[in-house]
Length: 201
Image 1 (tube, rainbow, N blue to C red):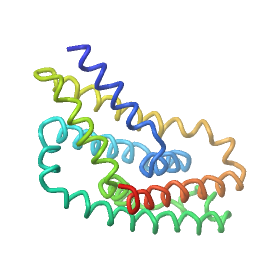
Image 2 (cartoon, rainbow, N blue to C red; image 1 turned 180 degrees about the vertical axis):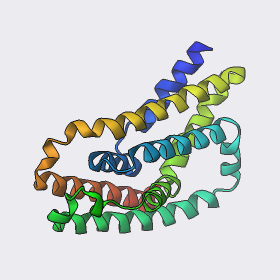
Image 3 (cartoon, one colour; image 1 turned 90 degrees about the horizontal axis):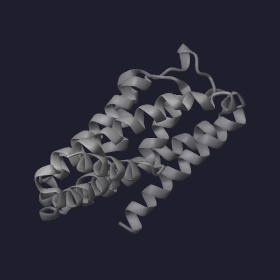
Image 4 (cartoon, one colour; image 1 turned 60 degrees about the vertical axis):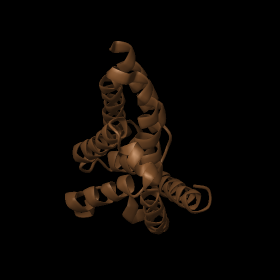
């Protein structure tokens, strides 16, 4: 039981650790200290849902209907290209990007909508959490519930650590140039993922 849980935790943590669109978004909102709890909770719950779907059979359904991945692939690429362009625009307007007062705060629903799109329109999420974790969980037979719980625990730990730990970097981001660099880096991440979806997936 414990072994299955720990393996699920380790594998889940290793998959989520890579810097992707979702992680970059959580990092920036953590730096801005806006709606951190709800963003982290939404990301973790989304991951938990996808992991549960993968472990308990949805992976097989996706393999029968590959068109689901194809649709998410192109819709996700388009969204990431547009979202990356918005970050380039913010990088060129440095004064706007560093204003963290109430006037610059985006509404919770808008932020959660962007977060949902970054999560559910990214086929890499499905391939990692649903297909890959779902396939690995097959070896755990009756212990797959504990494997899934381990992977889900890793998601909760990672997102809340990233969201709330980002504030440790705030002294660095008192410099407007740091925000510009972050916006450009996020744009590059978004665009590289978008291009990988179109040309290599």
